Image (tube, rainbow over all chains, first blue to last red; front, side, top):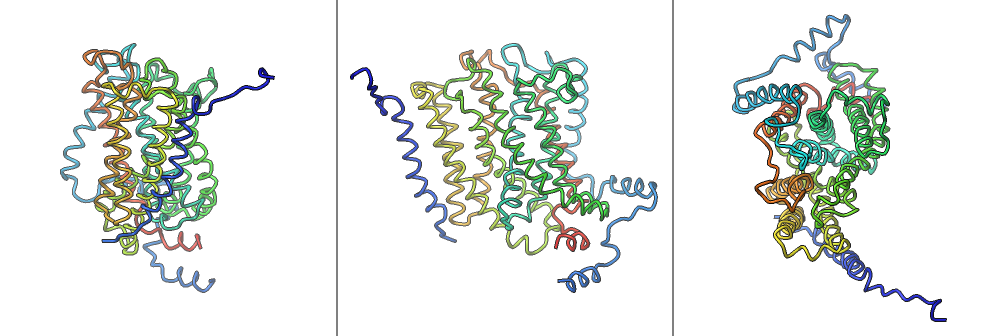
Length: 41
Length: 423
């Protein structure tokens, strides 16, 4: 049975990349809000 | 609507109708008249630029006659790509990217706000391709064979340069078609203007398709030098980096060039354009900031993906951080802050920093981070002849741009008959 199951540790292979992309999607929302916030002089 | 059209035609004075050519000699006389300089010739800009250009032309002839070796260029077998390919071609094409981005916004997304600057941007893009991409002739050892990819004399379809050559050629034609209504209006060719106006949308779609491919194609060119480019810059995703960076590089050029043009040719621009110009800059700054934000994350992501993080704590790593933080992250927030506060000075400053960053990025790929293991004393630095020829090409483009803006309806309103046709 053991040979039929292959365990992929997501964080050992592509962990940081996933976290950067998830981080990007979170931060882009805040950034977009910042860009569109009008503080006209 | 019909009444409005009639009225519009009725109020047009005869002198605004444009030239009419009954004989070929009329056309030749008109061109002769247009070729003559207008206004004061002895301006500081002319007095400085003319000698540089003339010297550049002589040096171009020498380069074509004597080849790429010493003393014309400092290129060698270690450094086959220098200032001409790094700055004139690769950077120049990135700066010309504003045309395809703005055409997409105006003609495909139908955002009319930017319509006022579309002709100046397309003209700038067309001339950039003509002069900077044209400068590729100087980089080719056997320059007299440049037509080979076009005529099928050994097509070389596997080469990235084959794609780049055809794309440059086709994109120049597409940009010429996009700009051609202005030429037809200048010459008073009404029927041709109508046909060219219909062709514009097709040329725009074709041009955008070509741009996405050859902007990334130039990045693909760099992938040939995997072992020579520093791991912090080398990634298999260079084409995507080149494409994304061309969006904000091109728009920064639009902001920079547009601001100068707006000031120098302010007498040609109508009052409503003056009024809305700041809105245009704010909109462009927003697009730049978001594109740069995405690009920054892409750069970080790819360094992690390529397992190059270990190189950050090294002299080349500090250089990479200088580029990424100083010329991507900082201008990104300057654009965002400038758009938020409607601070035009900040937006223009951010555009200049972005342009310097793009030059730095492209030169990193072609010779700064290229052969990075070679000692600084053995590195390639451009010769004075390379610098003068580059300056000469840029100044010639500026002269051509000025000549066309002064004669054709680029910034000034088109003739009434052309406006009437558009409705």
